[in-house]
Image: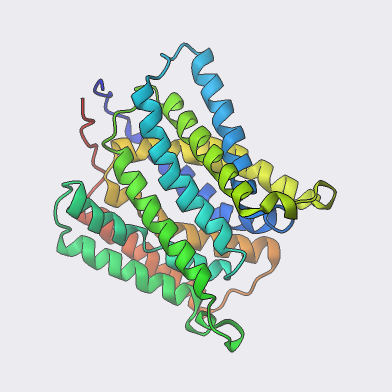
Length: 309
């Protein structure tokens, strides 16, 4: 793989803004989309359409055609990031509240640090990074609110917790693998291939699960169609493209901080559009999360990692 040119700070800031803000809104988008569209098929269609569009754009602008080994690596990444990661979130949100889903997803930085150290030679996390991770996790707990950990007094659906936890592990492993895999040098080509492979696998998984038998075109609501359109254009083509680029050029620990910021955005949008209550836990939790992000950034500033040849 040819070494990439060091990206500009403006490019990094723009990419992080897309991942932080847009992905925070996708919790709401997924929740609305799966109201009338099965979760795996919804996610599969979302990523396959977005991937096809991005791949066609890359080919039309003169990018080199990928090699077989590139397809193999992007298929692995698509399976880990999208089939396990995003598919797990979509499925879990049919079983557990979105706040609980956000709480579990915030464990991404922990898996990043652990797997990066054990399998990807990223080095042992420093004391400040560990402190930031713990502080961020505490902030998410406060944000969700202790009373919400047992919705309705009936407890949390164990299957939903297991599914989203497995998805979080898969997402972390896929991101770390992507930072070292042999991939096309053209970013759009790589992103399009990942979404094509992941979307295809999600559709296959949905069909194998029997979701097509539960799907009725005539019952799909306008809100769900609008939500999946938003997820395709902004959640996938814009934000996922930004994320797929960041994992190749920036510190994995810093990239993973989106897991702290996304729930804050999700709660704010819920308050703004769905009139969800914002209590003292929301305010305090958000402050703690911002503090954790500052601590992690202070411990390890935005680092441009060498891209393997």
